[in-house]
Image (cartoon, rainbow, N blue to C red; front, side):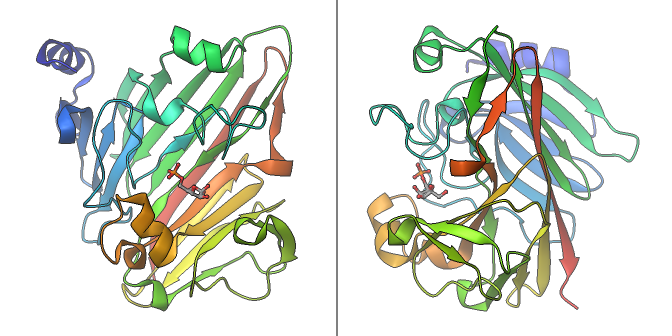
Length: 304
Ligand code: TA6
């Protein structure tokens, strides 16, 4: 985005003590947030929350040092928005995995200071001929990000057409951890999941999820808070969710991370994805005129 746009963005939406807009990595326009509670950076491309760090805490989101920041390229880390489908397109393998929302420009619709000192920004996906060609349903997508003592990310889809449509979606969040060997993910015990590492076979989670090889699982029909217990950083990350029935847990492990080219050496050891989603058999039908909201609330607690 050129400087004139940044100037008009700042003129319309900058808030001292909360948010300003600047040129970020790779020349991408970003919202830089710094308030009493936390700092964060959000790229307008994809409305992509790249960083979130509560004051006095280690970063909560993982962002690869080898991430590619370029127009139309998905950013490795933070909170990619997967919309309006999750994973490969259900009918057309030629369409981008995880939909197009994360690689197109979103516009700033509103920026405000919350009473508790948090900063709230609302983004709207900017439809183009290219997006309409991939998704012919009259619809809007908005992302409402509230940066405070916790991080709230809400994805709101509205059906503006006269026919229902089926929506797949995920807040594909990459979490910063001490080391993968010291992490246990809880609250998925007893949940059915589809195991993408094992031909989407169905299984039931026994005990906590630990990561000792590639893990790529879509947990189904679960709405519980998900907990990442991190003995390395001595903290628990809580992911509370509303409007989501799937939780995806992913770590590419060594070989797949190397193939992806933007993880860097040993990159897989410092991250785990716990994604707030509606995927596979949990996709959502949005009726004409209806709105569907999916919310993730991410907070950090001491591991006591
Ligand atoms: O959510 C897990 C997953 O679907 C994995 O299968 C892997 O493809 C990952 O997303 C990353 O996908 P990306 O398109 O961002 O490289």
